[in-house]
Length: 80
Image 1: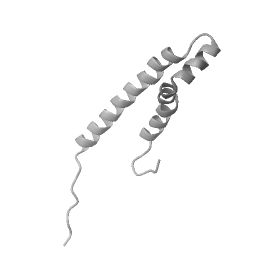
Image 2 (image 1 turned 90 degrees about the vertical axis):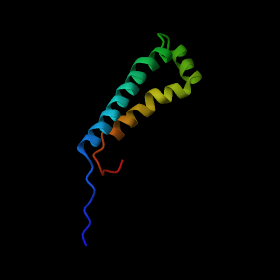
Image 3 (image 1 turned 60 degrees about the horizontal axis):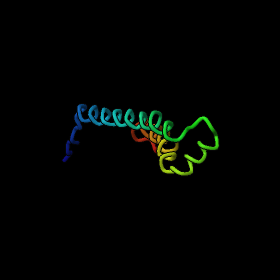
Image 4 (image 1 turned 90 degrees about the horizontal axis):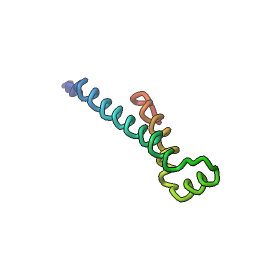
């Protein structure tokens, strides 16, 4: 006996992609709008001190965001 595979609605895929897209927008504003204003100063020594004082903010804004963009751009079924 052959069982029919349940069909996933294209609307479900569209909503999931929409949520991911909105997430990328919010994370992008955070990484490119908020983080540089908190960490980057005209003086390199002050910038270095700010980065050392707010290491998590630096990592969240600079390191994790490009990784998120690369992960979200992977085709379905493709290993990351």
